[in-house]
Image: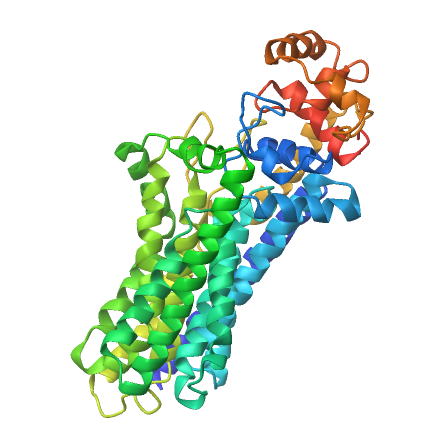
Length: 517
């Protein structure tokens, strides 16, 4: 009774805070989708690449020799570019199309976390409630909110990986009730295809495929006879689809690009790694959301108790995913990296804590191992985890500086603020509206009459196949006139990043067709 009363007292303010963060997330998304200019340094290159696709450039030509037109370095595989270009055919706005894909991917990832947590114990109101909390908590993560309305590839890859995990786990959990024929491996094939798509969105998202392969390998080695046979078949199919499909796609792109695909996707991303840089990013995340890390640690440690083996088996997959996500997050020390390297880690932590709450919150009378006293102690993990989740939401990092027209923390430290304080979420949201309005007024004089990029077969495109030095010279002379008249042809049709803020704005207008505001 005491435990249930404590849980009730903790979940009421937790739900209130999560609802407050959900409003904050929705307001942020609404404002950025209505803002017609790039905000993040990574949106410019993707904008230029999708513009080339819409101009008629074949996808393999984008990955060709970067010393030849269109003079671009493509850091990511083509899935996100193709989706953005396809969606832009319906609304004629590349920036909005790419941001919509990110928004839908963030929502899809939240729904995947709901399904994953619910699968820990599919029946019961408590499981449904905890799964909903996990989905809501995902939208409160600062980097999720920031990345969910930007033209960036990360959330699409994370979403695909999470749904692949759900399909793989669903197949293995239902193995005893399913047919043992090869036809019953449909969920495994679907999971493998989603993993392949995730890797061809961003190859560094390795947590999902690594966790599934290791998890199936363990079942294939140490499981019971039926479980072992099913896991062996699933693992064979999964590795076959991943290795064969990946080799075919990579080989086709490498051959059709003239042998340059690997340079774009692999060599161009091989920046130097600095331990001090990685520690700086990790320190920021730990200071901001350390209670979430502690809650995940509590669930993991309790599951290792000798009498909690049934619970350990159920959280093995989220624990593996979280571990590999933490390894992937070490890549944030790469020069040019950002907090998006923590997206998989946050998804894993939320999944792990949610699964633990579902299993421990039922108490010893309903837990999988009712005969063990360890669950009596473990059941107190539920109020402890609820308290830690509540504490992790008390502070948030403002996105914008409170006094100047720049991102928070760009030139001076910007400590986290209370979510419900004087400068709470509502004040930061109002500040963002003011900043975007000011930026719109600043950028309004830039021309909106830039025409879309010409098709490759047009005389204009052929006339523009100039040496790189000539293109740069023409751009330099056009920057000064960009604010007073339509951009010259060379500046209009060659949006190579970074060539100056003026050019990026011209290219933005050319692909979105927006009018100055």
